[in-house]
Structures are given as C-alpha cells and as structure tokens.
Figure 1 (tube, rainbow, N blue to C red):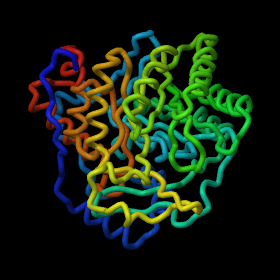
Figure 2: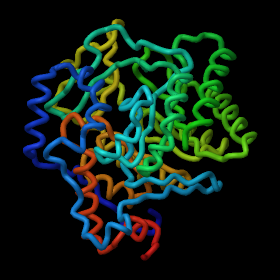
Figure 3: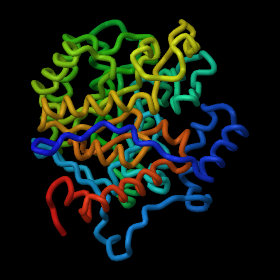
Length: 398
C-alpha cells in the first residue's frame, strides 16, 4: 500500500503433512483430475467429518472479533463485500452453482461461481483435458468453459444465496461470452444477457475477458469491442437501483502497452476492480520458471493447443502485477489469483493492496489448502502485532 515499506517477493513454501500424504493416496486411487474435480462439492459437504482438518489457533477471547474477516469497500459506494476470510474459491472451482454454503467448511470466505455462458457448453471434447504437473505443483487444463448455462447457474445461486450468507461467504458470479459467435452485435447481446442474469443474483459480477481454453479470440485482445462491452454493462448497472461491484478478469500474458490500454478502459468505464489473473497460456510457458519444460506439455485440445496453466509457478507474476497495478490505480479493488498456496502469500498481497485472493489449484496439492492458509495467515497477523486484518489494513483497532 502507498506509504508502506516495500514488501519483498518471497515464494513462501510449506512442508508436507499427514493430510497431504492422504491426498496423494486419494489421487492414486482416483487418477482422473476431472473426476476429482467433480467431487469437490461433495467433499466440501462432508468436510466436517473428514480427518486431519487444520484450523487457525485463535485464542478463545479473539474468536468473537473474527480476526480474519475482510470487508471490501468501493470508492463509488457500491455495496461492500463481507467475507469470513479473504480467501475466495476461484472461478472454475464451482462451475455449476451447487452447494455454495458448504465451501465454508473447507476454509473459503467467498465463492466465484462459474464461469457461466449464455448457452450451455459441454466444453472441449479432447481427453484428458486436465493434466497434473506435479513437479511444479501446477495444473494444465483446457476444460473449455463447460457449464450448464447462465439461466441454470443464476437460478441455483439465487436459491442458495441466503444459506451462503449465513456462513459469511461472499458470492460472485463469473460470466463470459459464449464462444463461437461471429456477429459483433450478437456477441454483445450474449454478454449483456449473461451480465443481467448474474447481476440480479450475485453480490459481484466477474467478467471473464481472457479465457485461453476455447480456441476463440479473447475479448481483452479486442480493444474496440471491449470498449463496447464495458460501456454496455456499466450502462446497465447505472440503470439498476442496487449498486453492485463489477470486476474485469485479465490475462497474465499481456504486454505493457496492452495492459496500459486495458487499464485506461477500466478507468474510463468506472469498473470497480480487477481479478489478476486468469490461467497462463500454455503456449507461452517459456516465460514461467518451471521444472516442466515447454516441449513436455502435451496438447489438451483437439487443435493441438496447450490450454492454460495454473498453480505455483504463476505467483511471481501475480505478485508483481498487484504491486504494479495498485500503484497505478490505487482506487481500484484488486483480487489476486495465480500461484497463491500459502497464507503468508495472502498476507503479503493484502499488505500490498489486494482486497482478497482467489485460489483453486492448491486444493490439488494441499490437504484442506484454504484452511491451512487461514492458519498461516493468522500466524502472520499475530507476528505483525495486530489483532485483526481490519486493524492491520485499515487501522481499525478494536
């Protein structure tokens, strides 16, 4: 944050636990990453009865103060977001909008549902479309925006919203343009339809401008069209009495000129915040520090594309981007995502100006990853001499 001493980059690491060994056994018994992904909601529901659950060691007298609670406020007075902790399940973790409240059981303070498109999608037909890169604690995927469609997803979110809020989970909905549309007016109508549906039921809307997994040109690479998209959705928002936050989700492989042009559009149209970032295009993996060599990545789409990469190697890019963009746009909300697998990373990003983080890939490598990150975040908070995140970040002493 402005005025604070520079925060050095540290790629905080963790030691394996008995729970991690159990997770490794589960991965051997269920070798398909996609099959394990489909069981995440069930795991969250049954989590209270699962062994080896870590928890922050919060003294009894501090629990009522909710030391990890995070409130995200916006400069334009949009409705604040209330999270029981600043760790959000990233879009892709819950594509169908089911069992939202259960994610509090495994350590999350929010859920970004989706990504949803107007037209239901099966996703890419090539199999396997997810590969584990164990040497890097990373994932290569090209699911291709598989989802049951915004009508179904929005209806499910609406029906479960109250239960999620009782667990102090912030509920967002990620939307994207339906791939394959050619006419620009049809494309714009498609995005607007999904935006309206999402805005009606979620606390915030995340517009995915940068999916690398569909074989179609990303919106964040089409500045004139993006200008129309952002202008249209914010015009719709201004016509609705309830003011909710709108985030734009960007790609991590943008050049400086591209990024600057996007930031100017975000500022021009008063977008509330940025989600930094989407998965990293596998075709450009040589720009990441990875043990897996670029020529070892196998295609995860029928056209030979390498899909997107997520996991630990992305963190250095996430860290630098938050630092760079927060200095340029101090009034914009930032949600950091990419390679965040340790509570000390959450702590560093929050001090640098991020309002919250998103994670998903770490669940494949750490048993109860979000709960362990909560515990590590609380340890960092204690070492800082502050009682709550609000005291640390906002100066609100209790």
